[in-house]
Length: 118
Picture 1 (tube, rainbow, N blue to C red):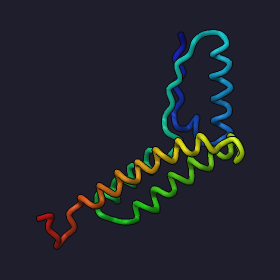
Picture 2: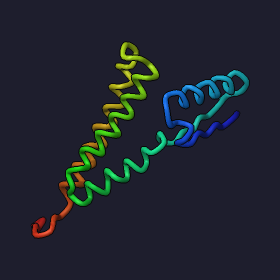
Picture 3: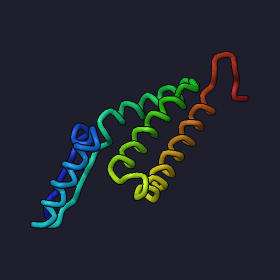
């Protein structure tokens, strides 16, 4: 058994992701593999920024979240094409919408200066 781990820079672009897929497929021909991947390069920082903004009750978290959505949808479409990406896009959109709900919940729970939760 072989464990293959790829960090964010290995997943920075669709081209880099294709390279990772080739490495995984080549490795799987010889031995069973376990693949561990990080978020796309920069996405962890974008997610932290979304959380920071939501925690400050700053609605700009919506814009930051939309950037994350755009990045994921673009990569899916680039790798699979519009015709073949619908199923995966639907699954990813479900997760991204859950993220949006969590961020919205954080934003709602944040006490704004001059306001009380009671």
